[in-house]
Image (cartoon, helix red, strand yellow):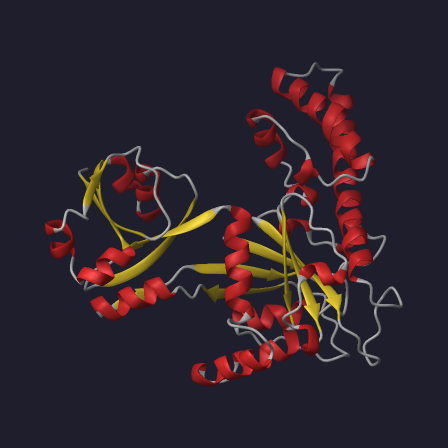
Length: 355
């Protein structure tokens, strides 16, 4: 899973990136990098940690999320200031919205207004998409001289009749309802306003536990939002784990921003985790919600999917309670499921296969 972190200059997005990925990119008030940073965050999952403690494996492999920290988006330069090539691979966008005051760090708009910035940022993405769609329609128009194939005809109709009017009405494409075929066509363009959006409201320390609604932000379809205080949470993330809880509690928080952002990202994208366990390895695997057992097997190896026979499945909490897979089998809690079984979050699974 890969997410692109975007925002206006001086919004605190690189500070958030450092907190999530344990990186050390420059974040002082004079820092202004034009490069894209890439880092990986381990997904902390207490269920998997308990399974690790039970099996004491040689290898422990939690799920990971990859983050791209994109240079600050400049107002009025949507298509020019966004690294479109890098963003084509991301599953969702993380928009870091400035909600803190600092007289030493001037806001590009001259004042701090999170609700305004959310609206304007979406407009920048819409402008970038509009430019791309117009160029594609121009190419299709020129191609009419040689004759369009049926797929190109459908593509032109989608772009001209549905997508362009939505963009001209300043409607993000993530809010446009399409049938399955048109969704597939649209994915090929990797349009920015079509990607799911996670709003991260970067507040001052005194509002780290505030509700999103208190910032006057409207959370629209295909969008999730949460509040962090990136600078103080970055400092807390560098403390020993037993000290972090006390400092977070002082802010009114029960868990760090890493866990909150990860959970919100999973909810936004509709993904879940299943686990494989044993003396050699305890590991988390990330799949889309609704994935059948055979498809889940393919995330481990294509041979397992191809030669799928059955899936041995037990709930993670039942395994922790009874301690062994054998005990779960005796209690009739270890089930044999076929290829169409829909995997559930927290399933502990062993795939039987033959190739």
